[in-house]
Image 1 (cartoon, rainbow, N blue to C red):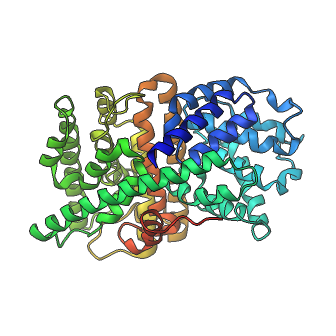
Image 2 (image 1 turned 180 degrees about the horizontal axis):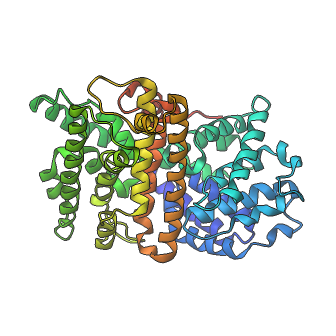
Image 3 (image 1 turned 120 degrees about the horizontal axis):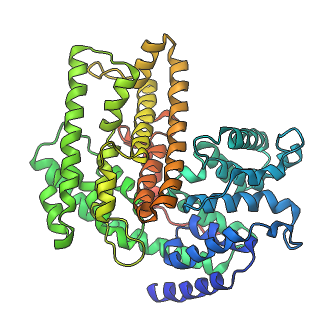
Length: 475
């Protein structure tokens, strides 16, 4: 299988090197990313994106059909922004009428609308006027088309309306798209075969890692009597897989799944020139215990803080900021862009915390609290951000949940904006920033639709089965 994979990779590299048109290039790059085989072609994709950045006027080429323009422009916009390359939102102005609204003639273009919807969710702070209309128009149009679309477009639209593609862990998209791509008339057999073989090899690796972790966890759980802790080994490992994909991240997945429980063993797994990393992780976990203590005191005193006071503490106790150095802890930087540099650890743990990390903590806190409010909390829990908002503003639960959800959306836009800033001002930090974004994406899945997929592990059972057990269907 590995020999065949190497043969197929050479063929795909040839396709990338020969890609000259903007249309073919962005569609191929989109497929490679959604099938999660893009890491095999990192240098070629970087070169191709620079080519795409320069080819902005090709939509006037006769080879590009007018009906494909919205789809291709949206694809280009999304791919460039996801890779830290600046492209202005005014590229969508050509699709608007004289009143500044998107042309109604586009409302039946399902593929174009889906691409626009996904692209617009890479909006940054200050782009409300430019991209909020795009989100509203494409969402309204896609919802009106539901029930009229065939497979696989119907499934792709449904998924995007739940979680837009830029906020979906790539692994989850791959699990679905690998079978959907085969149904597309224009699918590339070489790319499809590579994706299937790569997925099988990675799944085999995942199962071996999960077996090792399960044995470790059962011993620890039984010997230390961790009855107070949630037995969520598989869910934690699934989370790790959604953040770190591929063989090069094997150590990272193991370390991220263990975390907190086994610092000494983690130090032993690091190379001599990497052991300095552990001090960053230990420091952040010590700090997080202080935030937990503050929350415990609030709960004991039945104190309801102001919304701002609550958020300053609870975004830290969400665990996201503490996870920032842990994400980098096990990364092996061997060739290509380095993620786990000394500079990256200093950035991730700096005071005040970086805007990207803070926004990730806000996102985790807001989604957790809205889910907890809907599910109902136990008697000993402290007031959530939803309840603090209700008390401070004198509003009902529904209005408070909507307001906190809007703040979660604002956090995503900050994350998008900070990735662009990092890509422009200090590109060396971009690989680390992308891992932070991967972590934020997993939060979206865990709390999808107001559920708490970590506390109530059964909500993730289908996804876990899809990744580790279910065979890939053939069409």
